[in-house]
Length: 358
Image 1 (cartoon, one colour):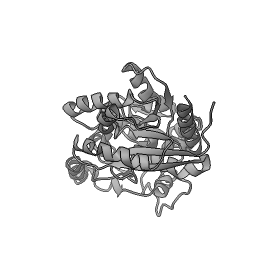
Image 2 (cartoon, one colour; image 1 turned 30 degrees about the vertical axis):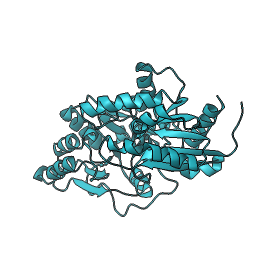
Image 3 (cartoon, helix red, strand yellow; image 1 turned 90 degrees about the horizontal axis):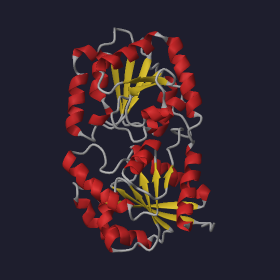
Image 4 (cartoon, helix red, strand yellow; image 1 turned 60 degrees about the horizontal axis):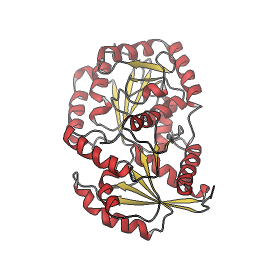
C-alpha cells in the first residue's frame, strides 16, 4: 500500500467549526491531534443560512479547498447535501471521503426537508470513495439504504478532556444522588420528558444538573425554561448552560448518574464519556444507546416516551447506592473497549490514507 506521509485534509463543514456540539467537537479533537499523525485539517465552511441556501456557496467552497492543496476532501455529513450538486458537475481533483455523524436527511428537521436533504446526501455519498461513520448504528443504516462501498466505523473518543476542571460544590446538594444530563436544548434530547420524570421524584431523591446550549432551538428552549419555573421542580435542578470540556470532565467525576432520554442519537458521545467516568447511564432504548449499554448491566434503558418508567428508574438509582456502583463499574469496564481520542485519530487518519491509496 502506498502511504501518504504528510496528509493534508480539507474538511467541509457548515458554519463555525468551533461549535461545541457532536460532530464539530469530533473534528476539533481530530484537528488538535493531527500533527502527531503527520496530518493537518483545514476547515472549509459553508455559510450557515436557511436550507437550502448554503448550497449557493458550493463553488467557493471547492475553490477554497483547492487553494489549501489537500490530499483528500472530507465532507462532514452536516454539509454533504450542500456540496452534492457541485460534486456532480465538477471534479475536486482529490479523493472525496464522507464523514457521517447523522443519517441521510439529517436530524431535527421536518419531513419535507428530511426527504429533500436525504436525496442530496445520498448523491454526495455516491461520489465518495469511502464512508467513515461515527457508530455501528449509522453503518447499519447506510447498508440498509443500499450503500455498497467501503464503510469504516470510527467512533468518538471516550475521554472528554485531557485535563479536568474543578467542581466548586457537592453536586448532590443535600440529596441522595447527583444526576447529570448533557445535551443542547433541542426536542430530540427529551429534556421536557426528563423534567417531568424528575418532578415526580420524592423530596431529597436527587439534584439534576443540566449542561448544554440553550440557544439552538429557541422555541423549545422557552418551553424547557417554562417547565423549569414550575413549583414541582423548585430546588431540584441546576442549569449550567454551555461549559468547557474541562468542566464537563469535572462534572462527570462528581456526578452519580448520567441521564439523557434522547430519541435519536447517531452515536451519543456523552454516553461513552459518562460510562468511561464510571457513571451508570439512563435513557430511552433508542438511537445508538443500546449499542453502548445493556439494560440492567451498564445502566437502565426505558421504552421511548415512558415518562413514568424513566421516573421509576431515576428513583431506583437514587435509593440504591449499591446498584449505582455496580452499574457504574460495569459501565467503566465496557467503556474501556471504546477508543480514546488518540485511538480515534489513529483510525481516522489511517482510514483516510487507505482511501487515498485505493
